Length: 95
Image 1: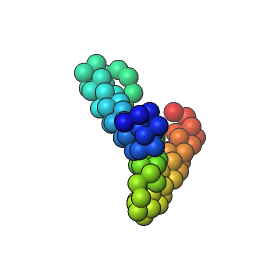
Image 2: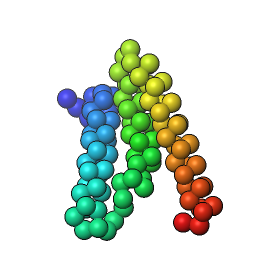
Image 3: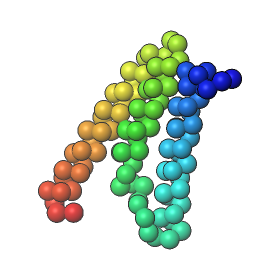
């Protein structure tokens, strides 16, 4: 498998999805162990939005998975909208 094959397959996207999952777990574990760092609940909508976009890309690269792509794009949009709304509310409330 050469570099061109790797980038034309879903492997790169699978690796990115893996990093998102590992990063989320690491954020959670660090906060649990030290009480410092980001609280996963504070960034969960951002993580969900990015993960949904990666899953939509993976579906787009897989023949016949266009319904999944549509579902994940909708999920990404809803998560992004909810994230913006939560941030606007927090700013309005003075947090």
